[in-house]
Length: 327
Image (cartoon, rainbow, N blue to C red; front, side, top):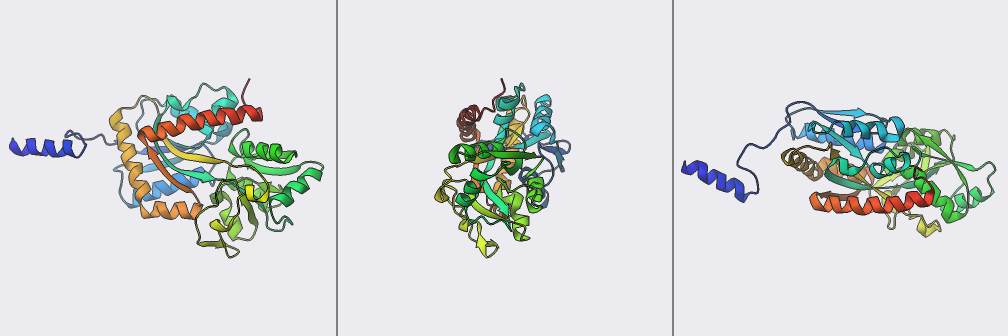
């Protein structure tokens, strides 16, 4: 009895319940609300690999792409799965923007926040053969382009589209925004010269940059990226100037986070918070952050919820200005 009592005290001192913690009993499904090849898909599959390599979960991880309706298919699937602790969704700022743009009865508060894994930057990309040396050159050409210059991105009334609207507003120009089902598709279209620019995340265009098909002009962040390892053309992510420094006053970053359905238990939520905390500490995750030029920013609990509330308010303002709010 004394030994059991001591074990219980030790467990309480460690901040855990002496009772057995919740564990998944079947395969864990991570829903990606975009097509394969995009940054969200890459993140989910990286996490899947880390969890499997280090045996962090007793059940297999399955990644399922549900890209229809600009991500709404995946979001509705998680909403309808309330109480199911074997489903997760990896999402971005679209968790605010899709409901705002569509009037779908969705809200991030219907879900269970697990963790923010990072923030992601956006880059202004052009074809490697394009004559533009900087964002100023591209914006000057856009002012005289008839028909309007084609700029590709992922989905309509989402992050990429919002950035293109901000570029129009900042430069007094008009673009023809071309939505794609993923950043990978947008990059392919840019490499094939079907669009003249994209606003892809770093991970979505790095393969074509390395392959000599595309190149970055500037990053839509207040500060330059920090990763100094050479990537392509003898340049690193840290060598890409900010768009602001090139006269294009547009900045934007988005969250990359994990959510569960609503109506799960605190023990089930705690299991996944612990799981993704371990993922965030793995050396392979740190390598992935550097490779994808992501901003390391892990948050869970109250810190994550506070970020979500502030980010939702920010996006409501941006979406209203762009005229993207559903009426």
